[in-house]
Image (tube, rainbow, N blue to C red):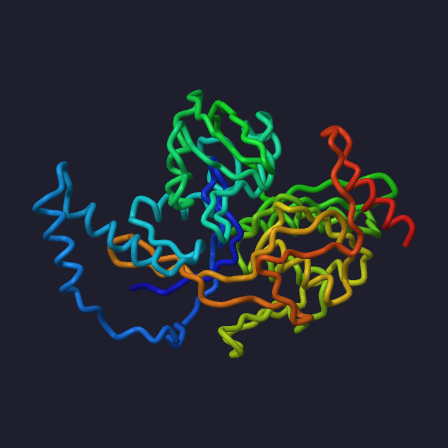
Length: 392
């Protein structure tokens, strides 16, 4: 097994871009190395395979259909990960791992442009549709539960499987049935090429810098730095950091971006296994925005590394949070690669903010709650952030 990488994920970006989380991860790009954890599961050093072999022999002798040894072994490995009951712990075959890592690097893919995750009940949930994506144009919303994909129920389906079924050739269609509240809705969406920069920015009226980060990937910090340099050259005096519909990504990317506002050594996040602190991240000292009044915008699609960044700035008194309650993903995954190219994404710890908060399944309640307008042409949350900065 090669060295592991650490993710904070919120979601899978469908391009479906396979970003957990995930997220869903969740995680992206150049990931932090972990040097192993002391096991506390109470499991034996190896499994008694006799009962498993009994099931295998019965399947081999009685199943009416074709099976390969690879199908069986992959199924066993997927089952081991699924036995945890943790939606963020997954086994990826070499093919699945390649797709997962491609998405984390922000490479363009073909799909519908929605970020997926799995809730505590095992439902496949849309974290957010990407701006300008086919999913958003069709009317898919954050928190929609996907009930079926092209007529196939998603019950018991992993996020990775859902992603593979939603992806497809540009110009082809996929039909999703979703549950929104108590109402079922059907959407037929035409797949397209999805390529969205992970960070963009501009200067608004009144010399307010606007920085939008759509996910935390390997290239995100460099893009943010470029925009911050533009802000400084223009004499920007206030900043809006827009993390709405950001599903998370690489923990170290969140650390570097939060560091732009924080004193060197200030705590960004702490990771714990039970009561034991196993890791922590601190500000790097590269802080051109230190002391600049800042509002962070969040909504239900803001997860994981986005929540880490927002709470780091909030708890260190560097920003005010405005918008709607965030998604609530307070756990960290590591990617453990194997020699055959397969990988295990496994939950290794819970993360805590500088103020000692863990928001898993809770989300972040903004300092000022502003519900989004039903009119997509009216960004009342952005206007509220601007008004707040001008008044303070």
